Length: 222
Image (cartoon, rainbow, N blue to C red; front, side):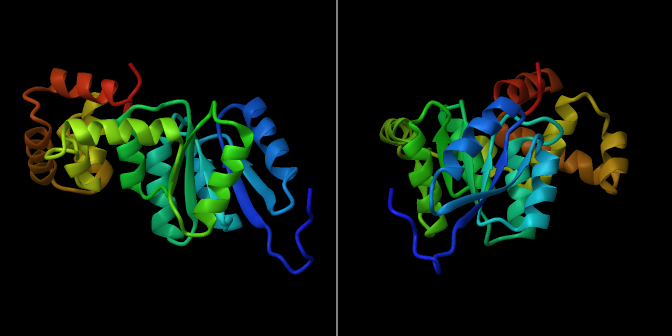
């Protein structure tokens, strides 16, 4: 394998996944590449955000199903604090709604965990160059969905504001409007208005439908 010239800057990568053995495997693959350097790791979404802000890597590998803070929420926070960091989703989920949610949060690419190691390496290099990358299977699914529904490609969730998404999760977890208002430092009237708007956008009619929707979209645990 050719070594990069001494002056070449290596791509600094942060690996975020809640499975230690998987993180070790990814680190081994990446550290064997002459142009990539793993500079840190995180076991949950909140730690991933903190490490990204502290270490300022070029690329963050982020799993979707993370404890403490979901992967797509972590992506949003990272991009808000460090807009120039590229975030690459690395997950087992290949459904179109999950892909759309992650890309909407600011992710630059989406790679499946069963992809060949060199595909992951190429994806990191691509997003670092400012390109977007998606695993072929994911891209095929998105094209299929677009061809089937060209006039309505964006689902209801993608139409929600960040605040509405936050309140959706709190409602699905069973919190009252008063509790949510206190937590977000808002008035109960404002929270109720957000609730009405998000349920209208999602075409939901009561809390039970909202809870089922949140579970189906993997926003909360069943």
